[in-house]
Length: 113
Length: 113
Image (cartoon, rainbow over all chains, first blue to last red; front, side):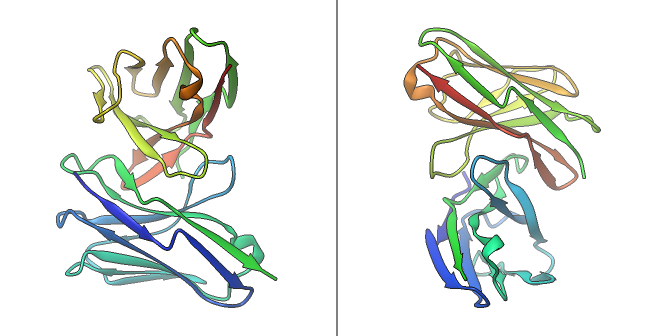
């Protein structure tokens, strides 16, 4: 089945710095890659996603890049703010159904002011 | 976006009893829903795929007789944790996809004492 690896597990940055989280996946047929932000005790919230027909997508301070050849995708957060502190998960479609999402292990981002 | 509602948000039960968790898609029909379990400081682990009108598909290592799933309508899936034990204490969260995006319920914090 699909295997999603996520790094780093923890990331500490100063307010205003950039943060980058990386994920790799195993199924070359995967075509949808979302990123979720989860605050303690709450449901995951989609922050950005990318499909396999594009290499990059940006939404204000958040961007995602995709390298299909290398089977990895990354989340970029610029000008970080304390409210960006949370756990971030990448995901990819489960193989072979492609319907459920398989999640990476998560990255705890801490932004200090 | 679509709304998925999960109930209850918290439940405490005695060891040996059963607990039912409901997951509803409020403004769309979901022929497929997904159940995840999340232990503290860990990722969301897919437990099973709930299929309307047919049997659920369980992930490897998940006991189908312990985690009973029923998807009797296009808007409701239920997860029953039978004969609960303290090790079943976790955050259970359901999900449904609308288009390519996955939407999550609020989650249920189960504590077995």
